[in-house]
Image (cartoon, rainbow over all chains, first blue to last red; front, side):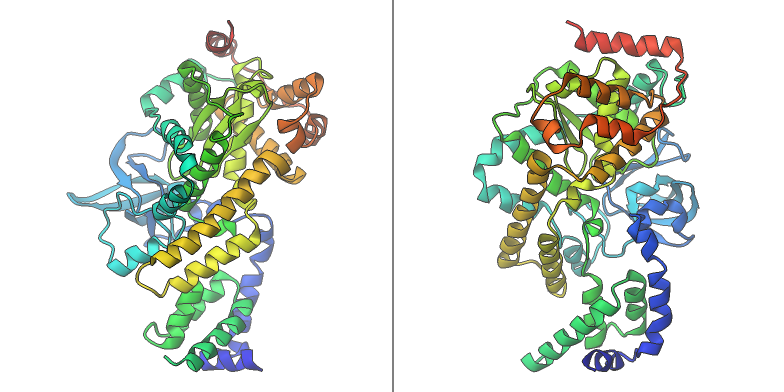
Length: 190
Length: 298
C-alpha cells in the first residue's frame, strides 16, 4: 500500500506506530470532552520546560496570586523557564535584560507550544528571522490591515473597537471595587 | 526538487496525516526524523498543520474578535451607549469576575465590556474578550449580582471559545492548510496575504452570522450558563442571580435578539437544576445595591 510505503520511507512501519497510536487514542475521550492541554492547567508542565507568553502583556508576580506584587512586566513572546507548576500557576525564571528574575505567572498567560503564533507587535525576544516569520503565520495585524483595506466602511467601527479596548483598569482600582462590594474573598458571601 | 518528487511527498503527506492525527504521534515522528532531510522537513511542515479552532492562538483569537466586534458596531441598530459611568461599571464587574476565577480564559488583551444603546435584549461575546451587552438586556437585571450574571455567561462563552467554534470547518481547514503550506517559506507574500485575508473574512462572517442570526447550540448555552454560574460563585456574587434574570426574561417575554438566538429562558432555568444556596454578607450586599442604584436608578 502506498501509505505503508510512505511510512517505510520514514523508517516507521505500522509496528513502530502502533504503541504511539494507542497512547494517542487514549487521549480521545479527553479531547471529546473539550479538555485541551490548556484545560489541564499548569500541572501539565514539567520543570525545565520553556513556555512562551501569549498575552500582549502580563506580570511576573512574587506570589501565585492575581494581585500579588509585580516582579517584572512580561510581553508577548517572552520565554520563561518553568521551575515548578503549582495549581493554575507556574513558578518560572525570566531572563530579563538586567538579569534573571524568579516569580510566578498564571498558566493561562503562556503556551508550551513551540510554534505558537504571535502578533509580532512589541515582541522583544531574540527570535531568529525564520522563527519570527513562522510565529507570524496566522491571523495577525497584517491580515487585519488587509481586511480593513478591503472594507473601508468598517473604519469608524474599528475606531469604536479601539476605544473600547483602550480602557485601562488598574489592579488597585479592581481591588478597591472587589473590596467595597465584599467580593473576591474580601468579606463577600461565598 | 522535481515536480514528480513533490507529488510523491504530497502523497506521502496524505497517507501520513490521517494515521498520525494526534499531536503525540506527530511529535514522535518529528523526533524520529532528521530535520535536514526532505522527510524531516515534510514531517515538521505537517506538524504545523493545525486542525481545529482549538489550535488558534490567543493573538489570532484577538484579531478575529476585533473584526467581529467591528462588524457588530458597524450596524446602525447597535450604537454604543455614551454613558461612561455605566461602561466603567460593566468593566469593573466583568474584570472582577475574570480576576477571581482561575478557569476564566485569559485573552491576548484583557476583557473589555461596552453597552449597546438598543432596547433589543441581547449580548455578544466576541472572541478575544470584547463583550457587548444591550441596554435592553441590562434592563432585565435589578441588582449588581444580576448584571454580573449576564456578564459571567458571556465570559463563559469566551472561555469555552464558542465564537471560534462557529467558524465553518471548511474555512478553518483552508486557513490551516494554507498556513501549513506556507510554513516552509520564509515570509508570507502578498498573494498569501490576500488568500488568507479571504479566509479570515469568511470566518468573521461565520461568527457574526451565528451571533446575530443562528445562535449557538442549546448545549453551548447550557454550558455557558453552568460555567457562568460557577464564575459568579467564584467571585462571591449570588450564583442564583442568573436564574433570576432568566425568570424575568421568561416573565416579560419578547421576540428577536436573544429570544431568537437562545433557547427559551424556561428551558435554561430547567437546565440549571436545583436552586443555589447563598448566604451573602448583608453589608456587602448593601454596598453593591448602593453602587448599582447609583448607575441604574434615575
